[in-house]
Length: 618
Image 1 (cartoon, rainbow, N blue to C red):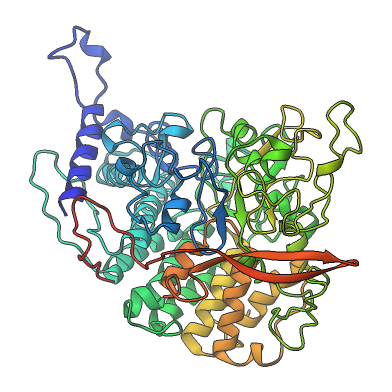
Image 2: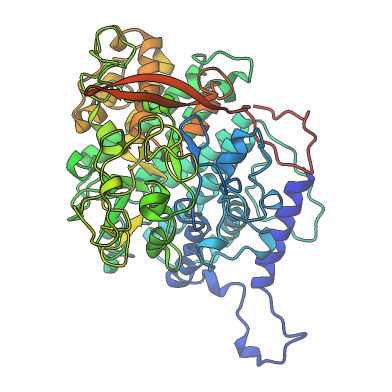
């Protein structure tokens, strides 16, 4: 644990330096010193201290000029110049490439720079997960250690403690889902003490995360606008952590602990869950749904209507408004979002918005592309997967009758790519419609699509150099939430069948697992799960997993999902394919071609401190 102790020690030094006097080497008046107790004496000061925890959350959507967060079989990057992104490194089997010392560009959001130089007040380039978690854990512990110094109302104290417990758990959970069991740091560690904390198993850490998430859920409000302490900031509390977020992560933490990798280890079976932990997850999610059902908040949480589905991830011409809710703000689907930093809402224009449609139409350099094998998870509008003999899928017309989310997320051959009919001197006729057949205008491996598809989930058709919908007016802001309600529905469905083997069972709430997955499908206009998929436990689990692949596509969930299901290194989840075809008299001849074999393994390791042969305990 030497590497971990090094970062804990540096974090301790960083925070302790911020709370002690420097009068021995600075010539300043005594009254300019800040007492170590002043930060905790009243609600305004203590909440100001606590606010910094939010700024320990990285913005993985806009942390660099272009950003990689999809590392399963879902996405591949264009060739030539994008090998600094972790998504490329994973494809090469380089699971050390997430660390700052192996990232000369400092482009990754998992680790950037060192914790000694980490500053929550810096811009978007200065935030990353690992150092932010270590800093945030110590800060949360420092707040809890001083909570008795606080003089205020019970409501104010509950709000402070709820946030501190939530973030201590959240930072630990983010670390263990990537690195396995770690020491759970629940006290302020002295900076002058030798640190030799024992490594805990995954479940031991998960239990301690759960205890903190539970405390947070019991202390936090559903809506901060309804509190006396923060009610004066009505309409400005949307990003604060709530009871709903705490329950969501309580359930997610238990579901991850129940999952095959964490429960049974790498030799387990993909359907072999810990039933007790799965039931705890289902109960937490059920409590969340019951809490929403009885809530009287004027800012309800719900699924956005499908005609505003994009508002979960992107806003256009709304003055940099944070995505996650309807345009009129009447319904919010985002349960937990990180902040933006500095010019964060203008950052999408200068990088990420240019990374999807191809360099020929937007002059971007890096292109993130959906793989053909992943696109095939998008089933038919009748709710059946493509390989079901009754689905109606036609290989000669492969893009007909598909799940409506397919048409929302994916650009395929023949799709409109430029809105304008003409652009004068720089005519766009060649690029107006997607020619994605083998050898087509958009099939360049460096400037176009390697796979036969483009990902348009987070941008509009007008995001090109002719329509300029990623310019200053209109302004585009891409920001993907860490958790949204649709994710919770699907985690509830998964935990129900994992715990009981019965899709029609329920926990804490009257909603069944089957009803939960169908609620997500119904919003998208997809027929419900039916037939043997709704009664057979393994078939239902397969549909839940396929639904997660479709509903949460390209939102950063797939990598950890495949790992916890013990599928990341299994065929066909370890390959990436392209769609090869030629247009023939109005229809297409389609074949599959492997683009690359991703050398995927189920464990990420941090280098320099552990040899390759060292295994993480699950």
